[in-house]
Length: 82
Image 1 (tube, rainbow, N blue to C red):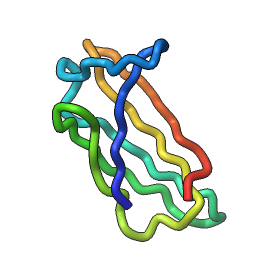
Image 2 (cartoon, rainbow, N blue to C red; image 1 turned 60 degrees about the horizontal axis):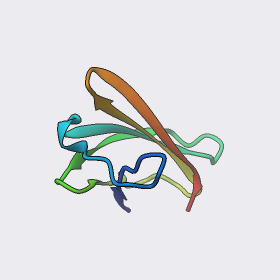
Image 3 (cartoon, one colour; image 1 turned 90 degrees about the vertical axis):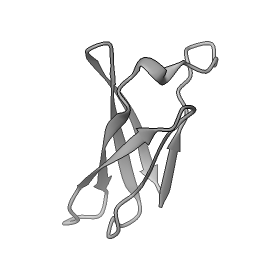
């Protein structure tokens, strides 16, 4: 249930996310019919954004991350995770 996200640019070079918001919003969306989505946060530890998926999210699921950088929101999505 632990999440760790590293941010890279188009040339696969690590992005200096130190100027980004210190936390990102995450939506865990289960693919199972009737299961409820759960929101949580990941925090920046100097190298990556880390956090823990809330209990009760059945597999498989999607994770949608919303990062803040210079006043704009950036979305990254990971689908069909188990």
